Amino acid sequence: MSEPKVFLLPDLGEGLTEAELVNWLVAVGDEIRVDQPIAEVETAKSMVEVPSPYAGTVAVLHGEPGQTLDVGKPLISVTPVGAAAASAAAPAAEPAGSAEIAAEVYREEEKAGSGNVLIGYGTPGGRGVARRTRPRKSSAGTAVAEPVAQVPAAEKAADDLLLMRTRVPGKLGAVISPLVRRMARDHGVDLGELQGSGTSGLIMRRDVEAVIKPSTVERPAVSPVEATPASVAATTGDTDVRTGLGITGRTAVRGVRKAVAANMTRSRSEIPEATVWVDVDATALVEMRAALKKADPDHTPGLLAFIARFVTAGLKKFPELNTRIVTTEDTTGGASQEIVAFDGVNLGFAAQTERGLMVPSVRNADKLSARELDAEIRRLTTVVREGKASPAELGSGTFTLNNYGVFGVDGSAAIINHPEVGILGVGRIIDKPWVVNGELAVRKVTELTLTFDHRVCDGGTAGGFLRYVADAIENPGTALADM
Image (cartoon, rainbow, N blue to C red; front, side, top):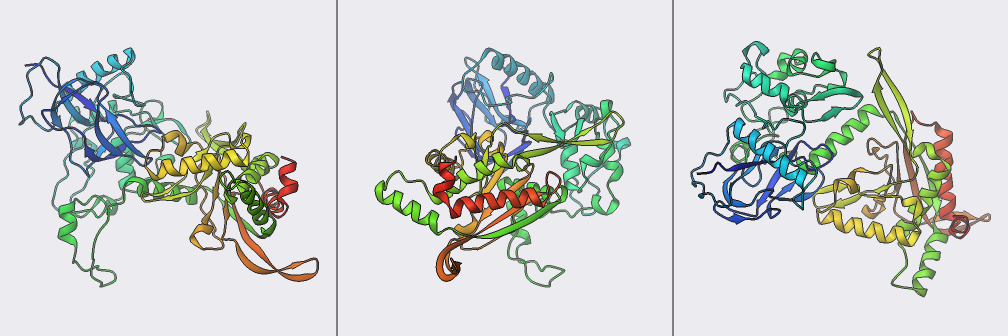
């Protein structure tokens, strides 16, 4: 009987290291073809259907819906076409050697081209080593990280080979294994501050273990973040020690919420931000759009599209806000920074979805008219709400526009969408008393709030950009005529 081929969960783009298994689209015993969707998985970016690189009979499904799977671990085992069907009692995990052989076979098929191939199928690099996680002991107070001397030689060798091409910002040579990344994340270790002891500065497990304090190594038998449904049910109804209140439930931080939390934390820890704001009389813009809508009800851009057009024009005049700071390691072991400027604007905009806050970006937005911007904003909003946005659509922005006025609020000191250097917020447009030509009048007023990275520019530049956008909103006809 032919050995089943093991397909490992691929890198689904943007260097993501894990995905949640949402739903199986096949069952054990099903006959499948190459490129047939076999599972739906949710990454921190979007919902993805994963196609099979093999044709044959499904032998093993490696995981249950709701389970988080690591990139590089077995997803499905398939008995090739013509071979005997695999037993329903097949083991849930393949030996590392089988996974390695299967990965090598798949890479050969990938080179030949099989059609619907996702980014990063198979395992990166020249070796197909499946990621393995050492079993945790269940007794409370047991250290998660064993001393290096107690780690089996074979497992340590696997760790050293597991180089999944994920880099630490600012460490050009610090490629580390997902196991090391997870250990560092679980214990709050900043990998960007470590000097690796491996070849070319590679950060090894021993480097992370050396800085983990005993108090952080200790952990309870059930972690709130890693709790399974069974453990959640068991802990519901407990009393919180700090507050004395009953605990009604625990929710795992994962998927989009996990990615947002990590990105916002990184933004606040790395970026010295400052915020400036201004009230703006938007009456002329509201009236201009109303006139256009009366003349052409079906093809009039929304107010956000006009503001987006003003923002892209403003970024052309103040390009410092359309940049990115890149940290690199110099030859002396120190760090140096440079400001990277872009030829064009990819304008991100915040969109609230059922899966959380998403920030798709309109590529080359500076080359689009207000009407074209409106169409692309609507398209991307639909795509992200359906969970079908690609990593490129969600990770390529150079500046973000946030319309929090839809939530009925006037202003917000927003957090910059790392690694960008600025975000402009627009509050609700409401009637307010306003002085016009020396007399009091009721006008349509909104508030613009700009949060910027003080490393790339000073208040003069930030204020100049904010004032440019404000003036364009107050005099839209003149502004559009000059664009």
